[in-house]
Amino acid sequence: MAATTLYSSNSPSTRAPIMENPQPHLSTSSSGGSPHPLNRVPLTSTGQRCWPASICKIILASAVTWLGVFNIPAQAPPNADRQAEALLSQMTLEEKIGQMTQVDMNALTNKSDIQKYGLGSMLSGGNSCPPEITARGWLKACEEYQSWALKTRLKIPLLYGIDAVHGHNKVDGAVVFPHNIGLGATHNPGLVEQAERVTASEIAGTGIRWAFAPCIAVARHESWGRTYESFGDSPDLVSKMGAAAVRGLQGKALSAEPATVLACAKHFLADGGTQNGVDQGDTQCDEATLRKVYLPPYLATIKAGVGSIMVSYNSWNG
Image 1 (cartoon, one colour):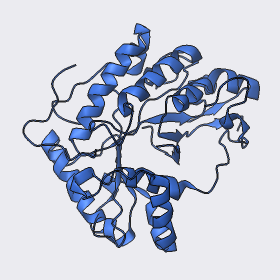
Image 2 (spheres, rainbow, N blue to C red; image 1 turned 135 degrees about the vertical axis):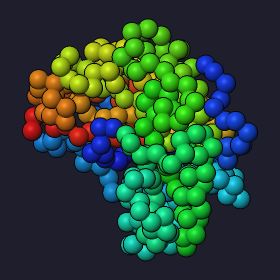
Image 3 (spheres, rainbow, N blue to C red; image 1 turned 60 degrees about the horizontal axis):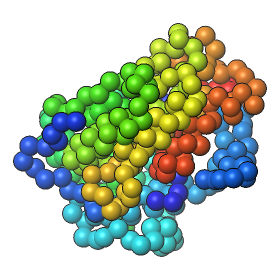
């Protein structure tokens, strides 16, 4: 997928596969001296960037790339952008709003709301799980949500995301890996890539195709309570590990490899540098430091092909 999806979040948030008998329903940078396009996007006073109003198209492109998921009778189109444009041209304002809305599993009290509002995305955050947390239970829940999406007028499938930050850790029996701080201590990008390949296969096996990982925060204050989510305090190390994680999750081609999932680099930007380590706090530094210390991992993961980026919850010189 050529485009990079950006969305915001206010939440903090090699063994055999865990599948028993059920079969997963799966679908089939800049270089030289030129500045990276990301460097040319203006920063706001909160440290976030002003992005073009094309998010709905990008979300649609992500969805139609995986029309084979959950037995939808279609192959990944040769031009997902063109198909997204065709869908977008048919959509009402309400349908566009629905596609740009992401709902947590716990907040969805009536599954029919997926059809009613044309919801485009769902997620399972820190404590969102189905009643049965086995691989079979997760697959059953995701298939049910997806069935409601396919009842909508345009039958656009849901994008389901989950916090699988050190393995598919919400699933009973999944392989659980060390947190990023432990993986970073190995200085072994190959090991990180292998771990994320295992994670991707287990996520895909439960019917989910979007992992809210890797966290590529550069942790610069040991008092930050989420330091364990970071690969370390070195931009170079975090860049190498983050790129490896993206390759592990997404493989070489999302639509062509069955056990791949969309990766999500987070949290843009400078979440690991807040003053006194206050979570969701304020990172105080000049723009040169922001670009030198906190931006490189994002450039590295974008170069590695990361499909989405999560906007952060902290401020920059706020």
